[in-house]
Image: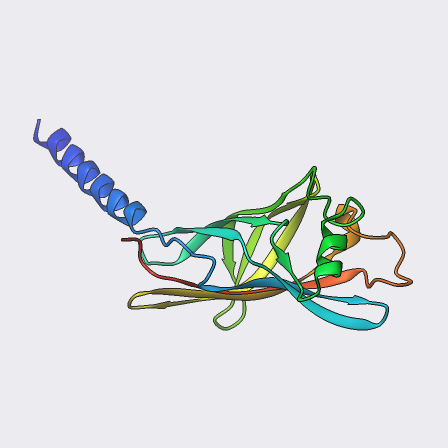
Length: 184
């Protein structure tokens, strides 16, 4: 049955290619980038970063992402102000005792203007999940890739901080600039 053999050989070749691609899916170390946000409290802007996070892209055969799985350890927050960091870990803010991580899952990526792309997915913070489109750029290079983006998020969607905006701005600007190297 030559036809079946050719189909089986073609399938085997595709599976071998897929295995190679999966084996080379980039893995990001926390030291290879920046993941954080900018917020406004009592009229003063401040920036903070998360020092522990995992970002795993799903990569197609062209080396382009078609999805992302992002997990952020909310306990690992660093604004440069220990008192503020402790307050942000408390129940009114991130409630890290009950919800130590935030997660973003994107299973679809679409093209945007220019070199831009958009992750379409869902963000979960404090047990609340909301749809969120995240604009980004993906720049592949011979030894890896770089992912950059900024998205505005209404913290009130997730019950983070006070409900009113009298002292704390409703929107935070989440920004990331991450670099991958191939897995060894």
